[in-house]
Length: 142
Image (cartoon, rainbow, N blue to C red; front, side, top):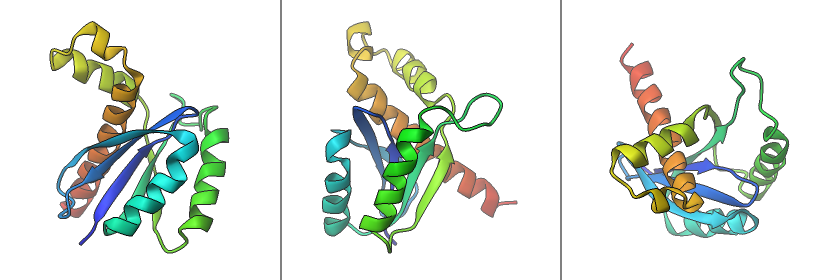
């Protein structure tokens, strides 16, 4: 069994999370400049067995795609071409940045550290991936 990568795509930088090999829990992997993301993913999957890439899909409150999908969709299309054998899944990421900020507050992180957008992006990617794992677990138990 391989790992699952989680992506919180951003125009400038992207948070990347990864599961353990048993796909039980997700943790922060990195925050990378978005222009280097494709190479980062290709390098990572050449070293590690990855079974799936989960990409955060931002939505508005009414469920419609958010404005940022116009940046994410071309990336996803390119990723499909660059790694055609890798399964990709879009996963709802509403509120993940808000949840990431709250998690940092609840964890006692200093205000100055909470302003570090790299940390927020990495935590958001981890939340997306953990939410995906939880939804998969819930589906298998119903």
